[in-house]
Image 1 (tube, rainbow, N blue to C red):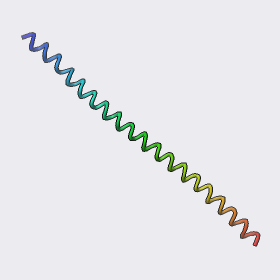
Image 2 (cartoon, rainbow, N blue to C red; image 1 turned 90 degrees about the vertical axis):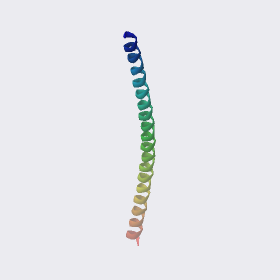
Image 3 (cartoon, helix red, strand yellow; image 1 turned 45 degrees about the vertical axis):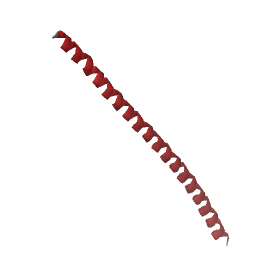
Image 4 (cartoon, rainbow, N blue to C red; image 1 turned 60 degrees about the vertical axis):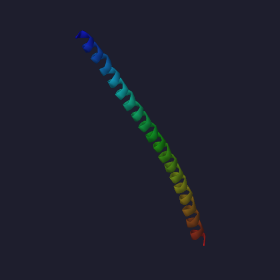
Length: 69
């Protein structure tokens, strides 16, 4: 009887360990995807800010030309 209990105790942590490992891998993959998505958004924000600066320069130049004429 103690052999059965010993086997059950050994098998259960193995299954739990496998589940834990699988969940950990899934979370790790999700984290990598989120990091990649965040980096992509950072790049888009940087490009938009640069575009905004360029548009502001063009507006300033247009105002100077309008005043001059």
